[in-house]
Image (cartoon, rainbow, N blue to C red; front, top):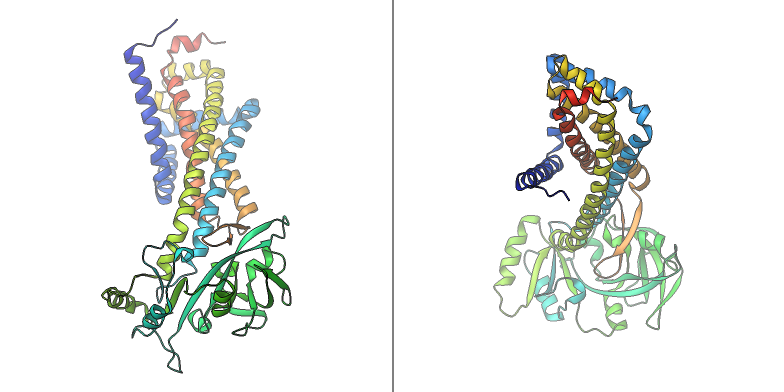
Length: 439
């Protein structure tokens, strides 16, 4: 049984460490570095003697790809799978994060009970609502009324159109000034609900995903009958909710306090004064954030989980793709061992040999990356999905952005570089006499 000596073990460990470092550098480099590298590589192969030799050898290797079509296709398909899965998972995280960050703004503030992480775990009493809404930094309308909305948040169940199975939907009770508080919200069908009545407005996305939310529909929640009188479009996460009058929702669910209070400030710069003034009052047990801060924080846990899952799955798949690239490159080197030895015998140095093997592998990797990124973009960019948010399903569109496509291509090139590196070094280090004896 062959036992590796300590020196060999050290060389293997150093090679693995170098591989990890190279992989991480390629993943973390900004896109313009990659473009600069491609430009420099093209310049080197065009204007230098060694570069021209490298391209000459690489052209011969690329021309033999049809003879190794099966193994080459395995590399391309494997890397396309890695990039496609990675880009799609990251697009889920990006889409969810974007819909929630669109929901908030810097000139509106949300008040929760101190220590609460979300509206569902918060309780703000009526005295606090009245005191905070009367703060001088809160914007007033033409009737000198504070633009503030004490809000209730309940979770109800409705069947999904796609499966017929019940899923959670956020039911938000909103105050009478909600239309001034959130001026982007517009009625796209029906009318606004009337205060004091069991009437609901359905968000555009909620209506598309769940049954029973058409205008005129009757729905029952906890034994109480409600009628859907209109549809609204808010262009943010509120599109996944259904709205009713806050007093009616509080009565229906037997609540004596609001979950939160949202106010519109005179301007974004007033937030610091608003927060500082309320923080000095020892009677108030509240925490204050801009709505942008609040909804960004709500997206962090889910986005971080999906990104970690994407990187983990991508890394596992990348490992398989690297072995595929290694196998293909080694096969190419073995088949051309005699030719490579002859090139070295007539004066070609190691650099053209190493460079040609790496170039072939990275071109295959680039092709796989482009295919995987294109499939992810074509199938999933703008595709709507739903996941459980703080109070119910949040509907969002997957965002296959240019940045994600670049990341996918960088992963592909990193896989190709590592997959071709060891075969390239093997080709350059094989003794010329041993290579010439190959049939």
